[in-house]
Amino acid sequence: MPGDLYLLAGRYRLIERLGQGGAGTVWRAIDEMLDRQVAVKQVRIPEGLDPRERAEFADRAMHEARSAGRLRDPAIVLVHDVVLDGGRPWIIMDLTTGRSLDKVIKERGPLPPGFVAAVGLRVLSALEVAHAHSLLHQDVKPANILLDADGTAMLTDFGIAAPMGGRGDMFGSAGSPGYMAPERLNEQPSGPSADLWSLGASLYTAVEGRAPFERALPAAVAAAVLLHEPPFPTRAGHELGRLLMAMLAKDPAARPTAAQVRQALSGLAGQGAAPRPAERRRRWWLLPGVLAAVVALGAGGWYAAAALGEQETGRYATAPDPCALLTDAQAAELVRGSPERSLTRPGECRWLIREGMYPARSLLVRVWAEQPTADLDGPRVAQRRFDSERSTRAAAEGVTRRQAYGKIREITGVGEVAIAQNGFRFYENSNESGIADSILLFRTSNLLGEVIWHREDVDVDTAPGGEPAGAITDQKTAVAAARLIMAALAK
Image 1 (cartoon, rainbow, N blue to C red):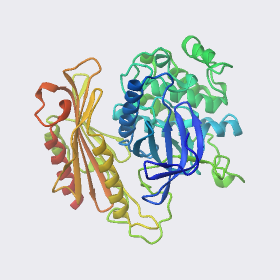
Image 2 (cartoon, rainbow, N blue to C red):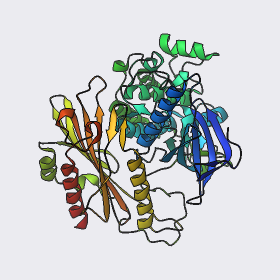
Image 3 (cartoon, rainbow, N blue to C red):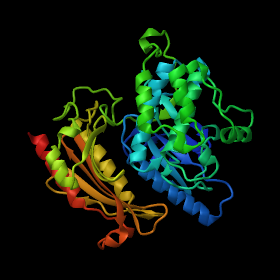
Image 4 (cartoon, one colour):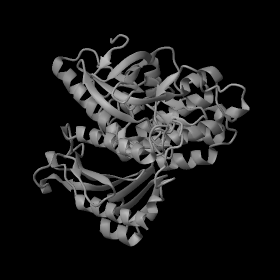
């Protein structure tokens, strides 16, 4: 265990331990290169592994942490670095004040249903982003849900995130028994519904003041998850109670979808919610000296907590509507069909082509405007974020298990700077076909944008040379879309 002032990877100096759980230990540290405080998670390596298994575990943990670093949503912790030190993976995250939901529940008891529904909507948004990137969180629980000073919820600790469809094993069985879906406890393949089950268990705990499968011993908790139904949450009210019971169904196919959960929570959020902080003498969800790893990327940007000072904002006070950056005719030509257009979440628009019932290909556009800090104007904040993204994506190059990323390519004629990268992931039951993505990131002034051209059922045999393990896609489509977006921004 590192002691005080331990220097990690020649850059991050550990100052104090903030917390410890089954997945690892979190430290407060100083990034000596950028002279700022960060949170550092020391990933726990399971006991009893031989040297080869330890190396495999570390390799997978680092790869999945890099994958988690791609996730962008106001309710998701930002992972901006991952290093191997002492044979262990370490995940670097931003640091800010916050209060975990489990501590709030211990101090306050059951929380108002409207407030719990609002928390659920935020966490659901984070999970939907992860699932759109084919990642499962795998450890959704009250301890990993943070409440900011205004009560806004964020989801942290993607340290054991894993690809969808994986089967539980010694590398993927981390988590808390009372918040692990039955299929995960049974080491069966898991999908997005497993994370939604964990969200349901967390919201149940928040509104009832106790966990749905509360027992004295961990083994009894696991048995209850597998064999018993939880009591109906009487404090939740009829509608929220019904939703939570449905989310906790043993059969994944019987659970509501993310869209159905969102619809139900949207109708309940704010009803009888907790008073605003100003209406209390004491902010019960924020106590001095309590720190947790979290960042919000979105309207507030990377440095949202910093004072704005007098720095220049940049060309964009707010991000434009992403659905207005491509016309329907342009999108139809790009995706080669008549797509369904939808604003999937604020700052993100998708044009989707289906073949029969199933998605075949889609074009996803995301835009967000970085804000100035006391030290940097908006464009320089955006450039720093862009540089960080470039480093993270370059580090992902290569083949890990059934997924591969190609080299970073510089793209000209798109904003002030742009890069693109190809990715490919085999389906779980196939060595011949999978999912291909071409991901383009650009910056113009203080605006960052991302274009993802996504295709299903790609035959690996069609891959041209030069990309690892079939990491191929039609990158020209993403570039063409980005250039049309820049033309729309220039109007």
